[in-house]
Length: 174
Image 1 (cartoon, rainbow, N blue to C red):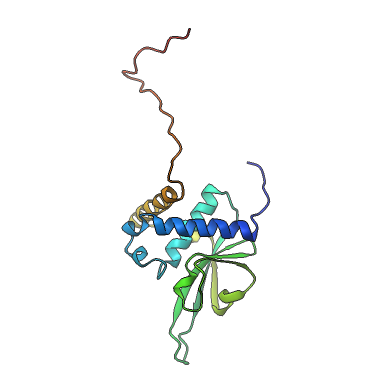
Image 2 (cartoon, rainbow, N blue to C red):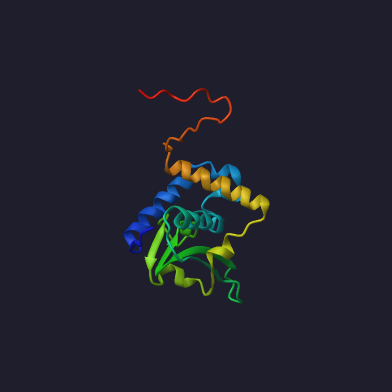
């Protein structure tokens, strides 16, 4: 595989928005109760789906997860948590609009911005966040392939191989 330059902010924003729209169009909501209210409460699952797409389909290296927390102190603010992705110096968030202070369905930025309001942050590797038990893995795969079908509604034709038994005689060459 050739080394290609890292994706720029515009390219990441287009990818993130297309992926968000694919989740909305897909049957992913059928496969997990959490996804029925998308984007509310779906940040972890949506980030896992997007990360898998970036790593397996686009071969983007160094995709990491950021888990942030805020509130919950003595000042009466409710405790909240949120998960988003970090790719190189970029922040990718396809569920930020579940919070009242964010209007855009997708946030792709460089630097702090809205994500700097999350005080307690933990960086998690792709490997740490993509470990599933059997049933979680099954749900994740179903959501992922449902989302991919929504992104690419006309699948590539499959190559048909003849069966070894009862395949019939070989084709005659003229």
